[in-house]
Length: 256
Image 1 (cartoon, rainbow, N blue to C red):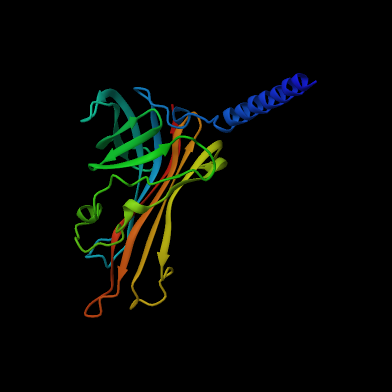
Image 2 (cartoon, one colour; image 1 turned 90 degrees about the vertical axis):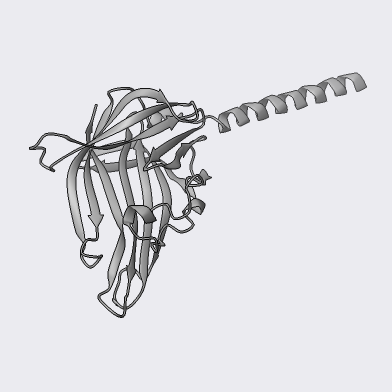
């Protein structure tokens, strides 16, 4: 009788163990990064690009709009010997009436569990595994101190302080998004930062800043929407108030 009881208990524990392992396997099933960022030579995505700048020593605000095409070039090895893809950018007018003009490049390194993007010699970790709701990581941990100060031409620019501590988070792992008359399903939303002080500006004598960043990737397509806001407003009591920084918005028009 005792032997039968022991056999029964062993069978129960074995069953529980198998079920537990199956559940753990199910819990760790995830989409792959390549599902949301396919990289093949010749692939392209065309965006509506809206770039906000602050000319006239920061006292004016201008939005420059274009069509922008990102084209995947051939694979190469980065300075760490890892397979990477160079991405060429091209610009033309918003109506597409003129030819494409080359407008720089960046590169993407797709690793087993993450994707790195290097632009203006700044490296960020854009996507990681597992792809699941609320997954969080330090996407800017490779950034130097004050990385955008040189881009805006002002060492006093402080909106990018502590950028290394931003928490990148999958805030929606299965969204729908409508852009330029097209609706996309299976969209992965990555939120980077949403931080602002004294926005909207109601008193020009008050300091204000706005840091906002998000990206959206459609399954089988790639990056379809991107919005970065990095600027600050200085009251400047001895002269006119001014802004410094920039903002960029990209929304997909078409792709191959």
